Image (cartoon, rainbow, N blue to C red; front, side, top):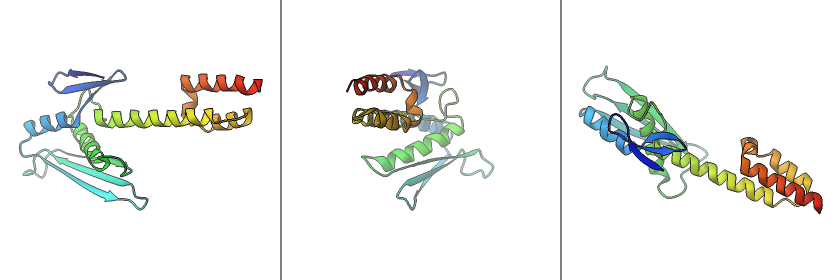
Amino acid sequence: MMIQSNKNNMKTIDLQGKKYAQVKDRMKEFREDNPKGLIETTPTIQEDGQIMFKARILKDKSDETSAEASGHAMGANKGAKAFEKLETIAVGRALALLGYGSDGAIASSEEMEEFLSYKSEKKDDAMDSLKATTDLDQLREVFMSLGNLMADKEIIALKNKLKKEHENN
């Protein structure tokens, strides 16, 4: 992860070759540009226990024709600071829609880090499921259930290794 500054002096973080601004930096720039601005968030707990945050941002709360944007984030309320992370993601998306971000990116660095962590967990779970297979039929069934993870090079390599092992047993 590399931190850089973009043309507006907003710091960005390089994640997998793309630049993302942190929400705190987007907010700082917004507050400097819009001293009469408004940022408000509203959480809603869904029937399934998920939390949805809506962030509404107004560039000038004293002008009803002022530019406005909203952003949303939804997820489970588990883990440390999950509630706050969802709120931050919603605010970051709304700020990006108003043009506060790097290179027009909507996702914030926080959102991308969360996504990459989720993706890594899913990959680890998939690899564990493949390793737990005891024969070719199970291996085929588990592999076919992996959806877009079937294209991952490490998963393909593991599947091929396990296939050879199962064929030899």
